[in-house]
Image 1 (cartoon, one colour):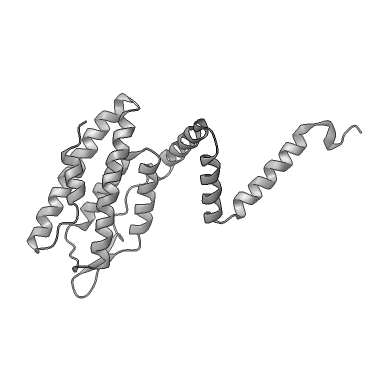
Image 2: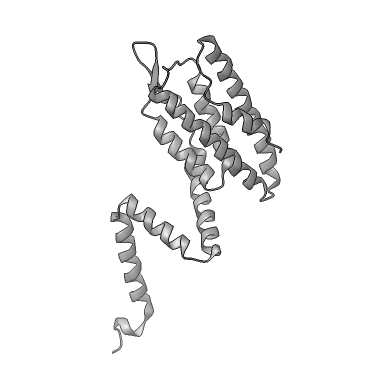
Length: 201
């Protein structure tokens, strides 16, 4: 019959999109993660490449432009020792998203700011903060690997940005080492320092 849904695919397609949008708006984060992982694992490599490209475009508009919080990363207690602050986990999650999507160079800049924020803080042995700093140390090593892969994409501007990011991170790691030596603490960024030392740009 003229004028019914059967005459044109457009209304049906619009209805499917509306239902999908409704699902996306209401699905849990864990469900979405599982669906995305399953889709990427069972799709051609071109699907993963397209997904990563879309992720980078999104991150360039969001996390990449947001400066690292200057306050709230670490909190000093009355006993003089510090603990992770309320802004640290969100900052780390955002930075991991960057290097996970192949934007390692900008993530190194973010990690440099996080390490800079540790200067002046102290932490107890085997404390929550010491454990968190060890995780950040491992994160930086992964971000360096992401940066290497990013440079293989041969964007001329990336190399200059990488050199600047590595210089910034190397400098702040050494500042941290000197600061920690003052109170005889254990330096937590040795893996990151070694990775930077052997990084060839």
